[in-house]
Image 1 (cartoon, rainbow, N blue to C red):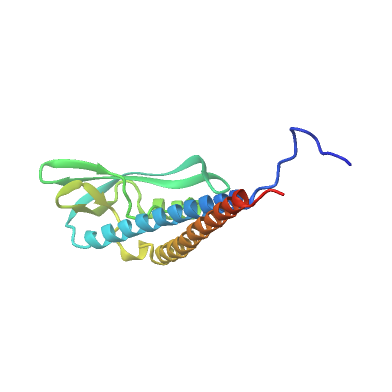
Image 2: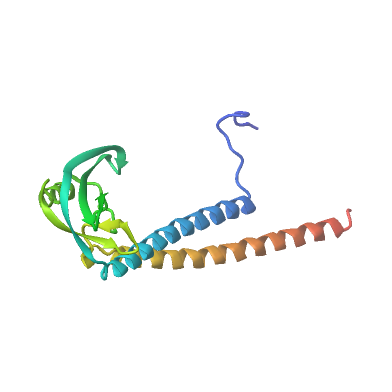
Length: 191
């Protein structure tokens, strides 16, 4: 008879209950992540729709440059456009940097495109929220709406929620059966 190393390198096999617990946690965490993406997409869509009635002010591009954010991209540094603009409403002056309601992905190509479309000194319309003029965007176009991504997030959330509910019920059933088996074994006469 041989025994494996003691204390290192070997892990006892997981019980059914531990496996269910791990599955339960993973499914619920995935559901929460997809749910957060769904909420973020819905809020962006709501803001985008509301902004269609926002007034505009004359603005000017103040900075337009490429920036490298280290460790932010999927495969290395993230390159983004940093664009700021100034605008005036009545006697109050503002400085904004929000391009739109959906943040562009990392990437040199999209960043260069945004910088080339918005050179320093260019006069541009700035769309601002009437109740809070500090809330402003340079682009309120519908094309930037996260339509397909939002649909995927909603569907993923619903599917994962269904799986999570099923796993929760399954785990509860397994625990009830295990408790009943333990109770039966305690009551059984010892021979």
